[in-house]
Image 1 (cartoon, rainbow, N blue to C red):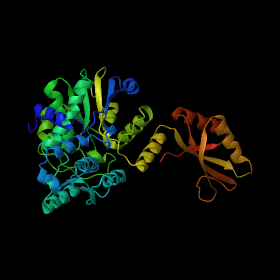
Image 2 (spheres, rainbow, N blue to C red):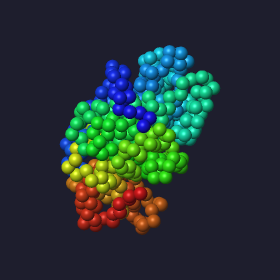
Image 3 (cartoon, rainbow, N blue to C red):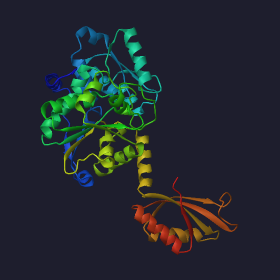
Image 4 (cartoon, rainbow, N blue to C red):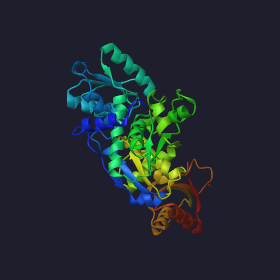
Length: 404
């Protein structure tokens, strides 16, 4: 093993006063929903919004004085770079962060606010990584690998030590996997003390690098768009793959819609903002057969750095899927008062109209003298939407729900 339990314990002592211990909160709602005793490790409550502070700070605190004065460089999808920028500024270490061109704006702006030089390069993490390595070599900077470094892995492992104290009765912990540094560190800490605890890794199905690597060895998986940008790593680490093989009991993947629904669920029921990677453990618990009924389960919510524009899209799409935002096409006689009668029926069913559009000329299913009206409505859910459609049809209107 590249890292052992005493190394992680030493990292925890080193990080005292530098990195906060995050709470592990019980969720009655998610427990009832999943049939488990469900706890959430709220790593989104770090100053920079993710667990990455642990590994970044542990690396910087072990950097020799001469290397500190020259500075550090790294590649990051966002969170690692942001964490490194924050702790480098605190320690007076110059930092250069290379992020993919599509990195979330919140992460770019935050890293720059902490004084780091942020360079946008490449279509994905791997292209940004190649540029960062070359840049570090050219400038004589220490390169801080975002996951495949013993100091970084040990820092991430301090999360596992906290869990052992906060939830000594846990039966399983679900951890997002990108490059594998977090699950490797947590696995060493937890399995080194309580081998019976199940370690379950969760990846996005769009970029399943660790799942593929465990099956058939390290390789580069194709790039793909995903809302879980924090774990969209196309090739896992040479150090982290053996850790995953030795310590992870099961790896599952989750789809984009499942990630979006988990983000919305956390926001609505737990009042907690999660990015795609942070919501992955909940997506797995809700949608995969993990044999955890009645078990005490910890979900590692690894980060909460999500652009508000993306969050708005996820919320709106989630409302549509739940039937709480519906779009109905209703055919009316093109006469004064016809629209008022339809909206009155909607009001009687306690629906809320958020948008109305008329179409007399381009509709294919209305006759001359009729008009097509598109109503976007807020409802309390699918049953309410169906009741509203039924009420309109009973009143004699032709109604079609527009779903895509």
